[in-house]
Image 1 (cartoon, rainbow, N blue to C red):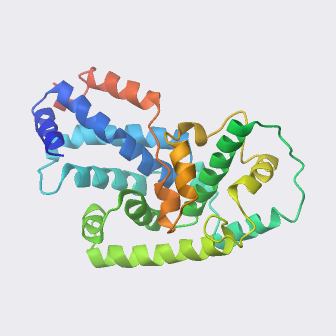
Image 2 (image 1 turned 135 degrees about the horizontal axis):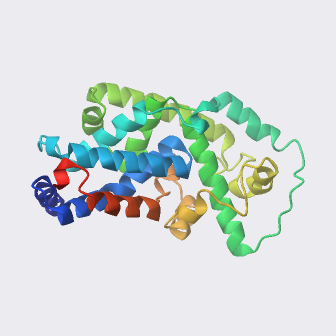
Length: 274
């Protein structure tokens, strides 16, 4: 962390190599935040690039009143909370409708029996899990989503969370408590990962998801981007709390983000780079 702060200082002084190190050190964190907020990997890619450009152009305003990580979260969260709604967000459903959709999925026999081997089965199960848990988050308001993600994925405590979102620690804590209660109630009533008595499991949802075109076996949106599928699946079998469902899913930003960053840094487009 001390080394990162030193690189930030160098970057503020116009060191391109330091700037590249700083941006590459936070790109995956930002991408993970964007993925949970927006559901779609392509939307997350675009948002990550936009946020990194903002960090680059606003770096001179960072005054070290907080840690660079906190400042980065503040820039990223502000962007994600105020950006134009994505297609997935426009189609957002409520927890009630989502619960009904899951229940109705078992009333009709699936017509899909897509042949897959053991590796594909594991990938499809991961795809169903990530798609479903991400959809849960879309049932929340953007602000509730952000508060929950900061806590569940990045272990942000209330005082820092309040600083990131320009609110009080108490307000952050109350929103988090309310949001966790909503997610817990939904998962305990619907999700086999949390409640073994529930009919819905990721593996059972594969054929149903293929039927409804929510899972494309030839074009996986989520599983192929997960950098720790084996660890995630193992941890999913040892869950001890709701937040673990979300925290086990870690991703890397695509190569498009990395190449775009390098091009921008070498372009001398922004004053900080000159």
